[in-house]
Length: 188
Image (cartoon, rainbow, N blue to C red; front, side, top):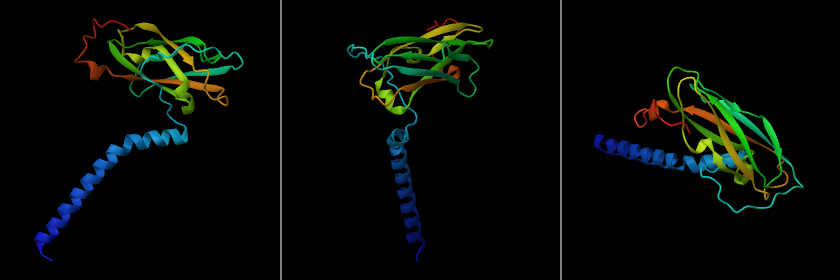
């Protein structure tokens, strides 16, 4: 076998490998979504506010909603809900407040990422107002209360009686440093 033919095969195999890796990378998002749905993990909520029509309140059912807050690695704020849980009827508009405090000596920017569990309930959980829609800027030592107003659709399957709304708070200060004047940034 000649060296030229061997090099052509190697180049061909490497090109095939590159195309395969690109295809796999392109398919990761749909595969992730299917796996999350199949295993009931990472219930994503809509990023936009709910603008659906008002539905009647189902007073025959009572749901319990648990609230959880965590900080991503490196986030120094204290962050949590003002209540751990509440009961409601599907179709009711309810509000819960989360408290954030920046204990550092510098301005910081945070972004909250929501998740609903079980993931099947995420399609029926609609936020009409949420601090997660925008980034939060806190000055050194500042503390704020941030509202979440939501409605759980009465059409949510009857077997779901309890759900959890959780937020993970990420420090995005470094990423936003060039686009914001943090010393004079408004507080959301």
